[in-house]
Image (cartoon, rainbow, N blue to C red; front, side, top):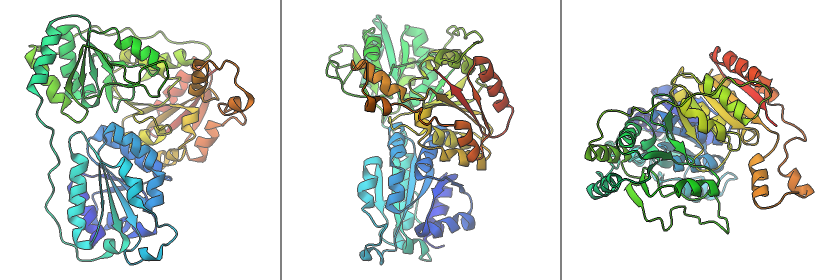
Length: 514
């Protein structure tokens, strides 16, 4: 095997099933190796930020490493925003970045750049392959890094001539870094404080928000009366009827502080201590600064599932969560607004669906109602770099073949990566994209009002306005091969959701909001 073939074979043997690719000349040997070796499916994306965002969505749900194939430093640079989001989500991703032939770099060709400086801020592990003989060991190390603990971002740069070199020997798999065992003292402290009574919550992140982690948290809540509270930008959440309800910490700092101040005890598990998205002169950056009742059960890089299970056992919290299911919303009627939009979506989420939640200002009512929907998974924007939604939905659909993906997106954010719609059409992915078209960067207008700017100046108004010209989202989708429709009433939205659910492929709904 040559270097490229060896790399792909190690990826396949290590559990990698998909490579989200936007390759160029320096990656041609790797592209050819996908055919010759087999086992890894190549998925073409029309922008590198689609590659990295789709890898993020895939990895969050599949819980195995996704691979990207990127063209030199500029290609990696195009994908940095969503690698930032993926790193915050602790998604296991291996980026393979092609580089110029080692003997060509000294000529300083046009695409040459300092790849390391671009990669390191979004990579937990980085290596530039130094020789063909080291390719196998480097790829094994990259996979091990990606699989470590909750998941990490690994970036491996491979020069073109090293990809072509033959033959290249194999290497023994490297062991991923395991979780440390739960801290028994932390478990004992949390149990003691919970037994003492008083208003308490478990502040959850990472694997505490789904699967066995959520079930253990539900057992603890049932036993102690503690409430369950999740991060603003969670990587993955399971919710719906029959599951322990998790309230999402509000986005705006005043509201978040008010929620957290209600509790005498806050047990952190799988999440760091929450902070505000931005700094405000009159508000603290750290919501829990000075709070006397904070106990850390497990940090973001620790085993939240094991810690919650140990805490549940210590509290003799047996069985399962058995709380009452919240009542669902009535069938909405009339002109669309965020509340009617949320009610329609909650009533029509298929069981076991995946909701990609990247709208901000229009999605708050949905988050409040989602626990009344059929059981489903949600993935949200973690790092705050907007525009990832269409890519996240693409990766989610590939991680859950045949599962309907419902993507709730804002129009300003949707304009970042409409190219992902093309991949959805090519792969015939069952993604329903609902664009909340309020024709504005509404979150910025809210921030202007919060800053006391009641009458913005002409330039400020223009910099938050999306009406001139208004984006025709159905035409955009059609241009990428995705059918769609416009709705402005709750009744029309329900009909469009039913039409989308009856299809096998992607569908876009432009929901016009005031």
